[in-house]
Image (cartoon, helix red, strand yellow):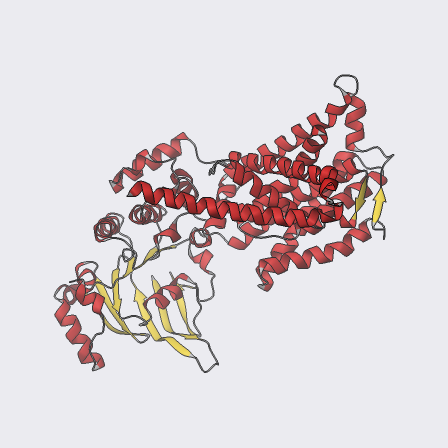
Length: 264
Length: 302
């Protein structure tokens, strides 16, 4: 569905600080895939997402979506079919607006005209969808989002993104900034929505056991390369130890990731 | 005295609504205002001198302001010029354009000409006491514009513009080009500023290229006074009301400065200093109020 061919990303091109953030990436995302991505800091995980979302364009290589070349398509155009959730829960919603206004803005993608769509029918619909989050948000439709916790906002962003039915969703460590309880709730919801709506998705995580537990395919990244791509039964048999061993075997050095080990 | 404060406050209040849109809703400090205010005045005056219908001249002034805002937005969006500089560029260019519109003159009087205001005055005279005619007229105009602005920000488009000022990434994630929204917001804002300038020219009886000098500071001070005195809210209707009320209060302060300033040896030349100091004082007060609020919250939580 979305394919990346031989893409490389260079930062500070042509200067002494030139840094190859992604090297010759080839990736074919199939419809219905739920890909988890692990890798140490600076491995290029977020850069890969930026590349897919259109925040950056590759120095060489190309990106295709459903047979169309989208290498130079700007981020806002790709956002029509690619949904993205960031680590920072504040990036998905507007703080100084009410919950219902936020839902109205995120309900339909694309340019909006001089029409007032927020009516009681819409409110009723939003309320019925909010019930799924089991957070009691359906009783707080008029409140400003400033009053909501990071977990609630992240869950809301997730719900609104799912309702817009994107072809691909990118989850960039979307539970990392939340407290353990909320992180658990949001992750559960993510898994539930992905199964329920059969969403094609990619999730970056620092937690290796989550990467193994969720999804049908796992990518391991290091120094701008995808070094290990496993799916299906082979992925089901993975354990954290096996992954670390695999990393050592491929790169001849230890997997430096304290958080991954600590979060066991 | 009180009527002239209110009338001035309401005329400039339309401009304050524009400044509120850019500074507070869009989070785009737009300095085009210093040029689009006299642009509105110049277009209106020239329209009147050409014998145009007053409302048509007002519409042309509005469109002129919209275009000025669009130019700033285009400079900022496409040439990646910082927002402040983009505004200053347009403002500087408008100075020359305004002189051109006024027929290569810096000041054009319309004292004895038929304007929208003289029209309203002559029509209403007799039914309402003369000194209240303009006041009532401007209450209707300013409140009407305020309600239209409220209505705009309740539409899907208006809400999205509001969200962009708060979180540009969110708007991008919705598949909307934030550049388009900025262009619309800046156009609307400067259109209102030009309308305010058009009314100011008729009220003062002339258009002057210097009319816009420091107008952004007056607008900002008004917005801040309104925000400071009235409870914080996220309701657009309350916020625009604050902007209008702030404008009236600001003009009350300026009126006192202008007519009673001599008591402390103040001259009209000191007014710009007073405006600046007023903003600084308001900033200090808002900061200390925020700190106090935080302290109280911390106490309560303990």
